Image (cartoon, rainbow, N blue to C red; front, side, top):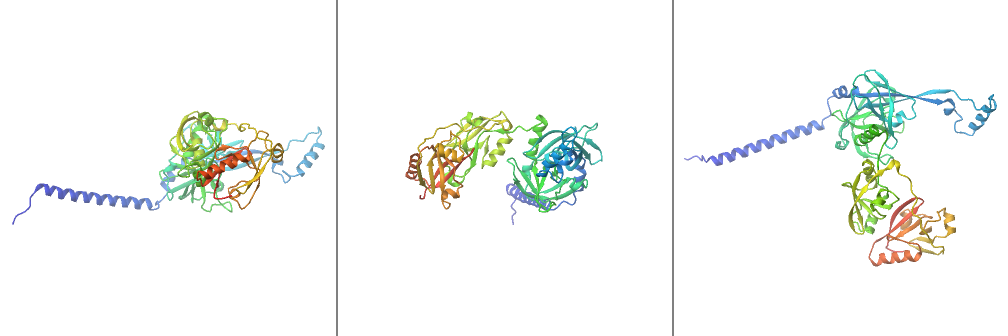
Length: 489
């Protein structure tokens, strides 16, 4: 009997065995890590010890006239009592009312050893005095460095003879729904308190153009405002700002402004004492499927430009009907994303903007202005015909503009187009939001001033086999595009 002693076969077999062993160990480690990630922390105590020194209580005092909060404030009786006080005053003037102190409580956190503190703007709004209480019991007065109403953020500063403990911002984009988080602050004025929970949702919007909230079920109550929301590494990934509650108490639906927004705003407040958001200078609307079809876009995405007043976009050559697809390399899904992206961009910086125009994409270079400095502009003046005619088209009764109609509708003398004088409530136009008094400035991407202009554009669209027809509608200072179906009158 013979034995196979081929060394090449032996080495191959050994390598296969080793590979199998390594793969098995890798799978075991991955399973162990997944189990650890899914298991609740044994304790939050170590994390509390790590960050508590940087979390602060905030107390504010405000001088309030006693009459400001009186029972007659804002009522017709207020004038009566003011006249009564004037008549009984020796010099005929209303005597100055005594003032009382109003106090408010909130939370915040230190972001640098030299004493910069982040909180909510509503915590310190109208405050005459701001006092910071640290976890150690030390108290220091604070001054306001800057505030931002749009994100409800404020940056304060205290002076300390010793370096202060501080915390750093984490990457809120790295957070996932289901991740553990810990909130810390001063709920209901009870002093330092900790609550824990998970990320319930991401990218929540409440009411602001720059909103990017993390929703959490960690208990947040009044007094927690301005306090930090931590990840498990002790990094701030949100600023606790608001709760959804029918009774004013926590029901497990709290919102923290994401750290990526906060970090950008705080950096500007620290450098300039105010925000400096990028400004593109366009009025925009979302692109739905019918608009996409009318414009020739393959998919409904981007931000449709409805108006371009004087500003950066106009100087760069952006026009109404352009669809902004990317901004500075970022794909734009809708108008909210564009507003937030432009706002986060630095002022006086040239960025590349990709637009869709007449079936093709173009790249334009736009130097951004500053939104805070932007002024409202009046649309360019146009002339309109005086002869009045009327016709019913696609469920709309449309008239050419006359001086009489302008006066009745409160329109400026230089507004041109066709006016909607009546509308059928069961029409597609009504469902799309058109109303009596709206002015049709463009039809089929061409300016219209007469009914024949409009009828010609509709006929051309039907001959071209279009399923929908694009109108530019102006209501007051707002303009938007509306796509109406061409499946019948």
